[in-house]
Image 1 (cartoon, one colour):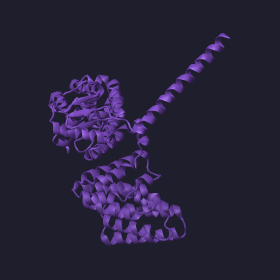
Image 2: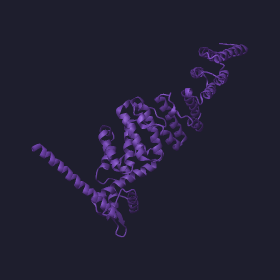
Image 3: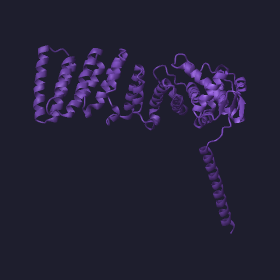
Length: 423
């Protein structure tokens, strides 16, 4: 539709006069009709710059109905899809100025922010994209649906990973309550969320939490194999065997505890058939659950191709060192089971490490309260039979007394039950 400049200006002026008259008369129907005509005229004549000026000025008019502002913004959001990049960016800026700090336009504002951020990201302006995103608190938006909120927060997390701002990434991740994504309808978003958490905890070398994040992804894949098609950025592989392998390996890398052993046992029972496709990993898990010495050479376990050792993933060398350490720590716990005391050179002979490294690892385990022993360097002996202090003796005595009292109480109850049956 071609209209001369003077004719366009005259039509706009006439419509603005009608809009003013209807607005001051509180005629909502007429006001909505005229504002729509203004927007349509601008779009039909491709006068987008003029529309950007008008939408801002109209939104500031005294007594302008909320409905009129909403209609104008929604028409602009539809028209955005047809514009070139420069025109689109100009209109997005105008829409954001209209929507800013208005609850009834908060969803449109968030969508414009997201579009603007995506252009910044495509242009590799990650710092600018992050600055724009972090000012939007979609978690407080009551009019935005759950899925759209989650997608927005996940996009914030993605930008922080690209910016390598891991502190802010962790802060943003706390906006999502884990219980709120335990929904099969948003299982794909759950996978993306925990994938981003894996990247954070992997950066922090927090093996326990990394394993937990992988376990959540694995739960979803175990329920629905079709979720393997979920697309995650940063070349993060959503493959059942890979996720299972990573879950197991990060669990093994974590510091020894009763909880760790229970997780490994649960892993073996829950994902029994999945582990059959990974025989080397299955043998390794059984070795950590067993009570026998195992090789401290990582190569002997044939898991060099595991993703956790991939050179393209940061801190891969540190994970290799920590894996070997867990092999050594397992063996030292086994010695504690079978020996009251043992020569240092005997330990080094059996597990294949130097005396210096052995002493360092024993000291580390003692510091983490994973081992109770002392080293006699003069005689070259590790003594596991430590003299108990007063508190330990008292605690053990108290536990034994409780056991005896519980047995007496149980016996008394059984006797009473028998008496009631036969008397």
